[in-house]
Structures are given as C-alpha cells and as structure tokens.
Amino acid sequence: MNNHHILSVLVQNRPGVLARVAGLFARRGFNIFSLAVAPAEDEGFSRITIVVDVEDTPLEQITKQLFKLIEVVKISELDPRRSVERELLLATVRATSEQRGQVVELVNIFEGKILAVGVEAITVSLEGHPDKLDDFEELLAGYGIVELQRTGRVALPKLDRDARLRAVQNTNKGKAG
Image (cartoon, rainbow, N blue to C red; front, side):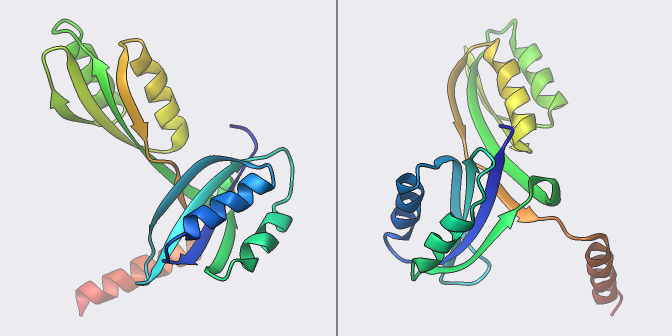
C-alpha cells in the first residue's frame, strides 16, 4: 500500500460511535484499509486507528466531518515515516511432520510464536510492522494457509529524540529514589 493515511481518532466510548465513523468514510467514498478500536488511556474513551488508502487526497474534509460527530474528541493524522505501526497476525498453516521443522524455523526467523501444534497443522502468531507481516504471510502461503486473521494496524506518533531521552532519564530517576 503506497499511499495511505493513518488517522488516530479519540472518541467517547458510546454505542454506535464506530458505525457513525465508518459510515462517514463510506459516504465520502474512502476505502478503509484497516480499522482497529480499543480502550484509550483515559477511562470512558476509545482510540480508533483508521488506515485509509487514498490518492493524494488531503483528509481535511473528512477530518472536518469527523469533528461534527459529537463523540469525537481528538483527531491526529499520523505520518507513516514519523509513527510506530504494529499489527498482529494469527495463522493456522498446513504442516506435515516433514514440513513442521521448516515452518518452525520460518516462525523463529521472523521472531513469531508457535501457539498450537496439531497432526497436520500449526497455529502461529507474529506481531510487527505491517510490511513484516505481509512478507511472513507470503512465505506461509507456500505451505498452505488454513485460516488467517490480522488485527488491523495500530499506530502512535514516534517520540522525538529529546522526549525519548527525557523519558529514560525520568525512569532512571524513579528507580534511583
């Protein structure tokens, strides 16, 4: 996916909010590539991470429309070059006893986990940048994917270098005292 925008939308945690947000994107003709929702750091709020695949279209108009929804508290557009993105993949892969070692080696190379082993299949998990998961999924396909599920992308802004340094210093001060 070459041209995508990542929106982090903080909303009040109320019934129907997700449907209204998704409906707004549908009415504008924007395809939602990935959507993840989870409770936010503050009780009563949720963070919706929306990845939209668009062609050089600024999201100003969609942001203005989102802000019209009473439950929307804050919207941040995250630049993929200045954000940390992660996704989780779970997959059950065909693996005969002869192939099992190869699949386990592949999982280890990608720093994934074996979750379950059956007679003819293995269930694995991998967390990481979406590009890493794409590569892993492509290699697993050669063995035969029985089932696959991906969570959708979550993202936060990268900390600037000074902020990271301050965070480490503050952590060390807390341990010393």
